[in-house]
Length: 430
Ligand code: NAD
Image (cartoon, rainbow, N blue to C red; front, side, top):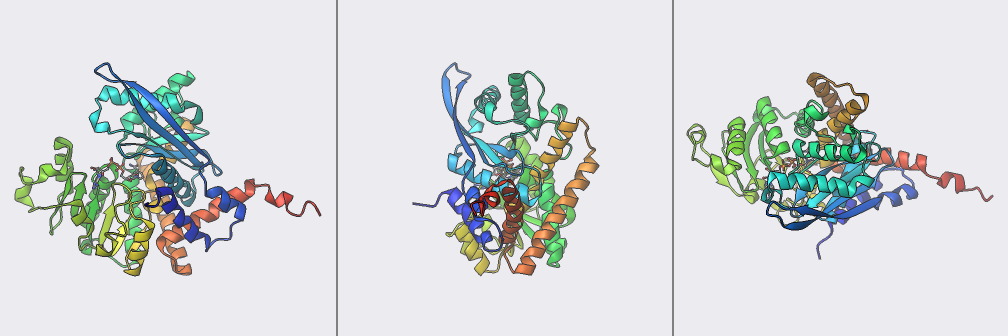
């Protein structure tokens, strides 16, 4: 039987434990999610029938602050997946020194099969079901795969209806008109862009001489491809769930985004339109995209994309994990043996939760920042932590992943020990 996602995620914790001085109590606490809620959500469908959906909310740890994490709508959502995503959020928030613990939620559903009204009823039904375990001081929601600002707006509104007052701080990633923050929709990609630039600078790699392939052309992937292309990186391949495209001379990212929006898929670019006269594209499968001979590979879709089965075929020199958990721990070992540097998800994609923190702060103060202010604060934070992880990796001769976990664990361990009672009891009987 294959290993569960959470068991695989925990291997990263084990690897980092060798490099930190942290108490046994803290280690034991971090091995288990604090609360795992599973709910059944009844929804009246447009045709009058009643359908039940399964939803989850997991708060992995809240020692450093309220739980924080997105909500995913996908047919493969399971308790194991949500627990592992909540685990990663715990380390991500600690790594970025945000006053949050880690949480995550999800509904097992194919959102593309629902009408907009059904999607709204499902989102409101989910909040009804989990309302007692979330809140601006307990557990804060955000968007993830196949959820967006509109859905976050419905969720915040439903929570506010239940509590008979406006509670913007319970959800981040909301529309601007409902208390969202400037820069939130592009924050994950912008954060990733700063991490990629920082690491490339350290490696003496110039954008113009760097080729990039991006798997996943959604909120995070399309925007990071755009920002890299604007900076001069040569983005030669992109893909979505239906397949990908490749052009040796570099792709025209704005046109591809436009076609995807118009036609709901990158396939629309496949030579039905004038874009094909500008740039010659080759059609690629997702498997082919992952094994392209490029300088940088960016998985920005889902977890478990690079496994022991395909890791030895990866030719990229650098991988930046914009998706959560795209590489298994077994694949990690193969990539390390092949001298491929992996910059982990908990650092690369932390821009999203960082601006979510900014949004939560703005909601609590009722005072809103300009786009320039958000951009500047995000840039400072991402570059600072990317440099911290880089320095730790260099000084202790660690992989970037183990360095990132070590850095986060030091902060988590301090908080867990500060809250603990062990020091009081040890020696108290003498
Ligand atoms: P999204 O739903 O906007 O986009 C996902 C993209 O992946 C879509 O283009 C979809 O077609 C594509 N995709 C799905 N299966 C694929 C496959 N097998 N091969 C290639 N492409 C495939 O989601 P998103 O918000 O961009 O999130 C993507 C990843 O980034 C997820 O792992 C998510 O957890 C992570 N992430 C997102 C945010 C955020 O703020 N959006 C923050 C942190 C991490």
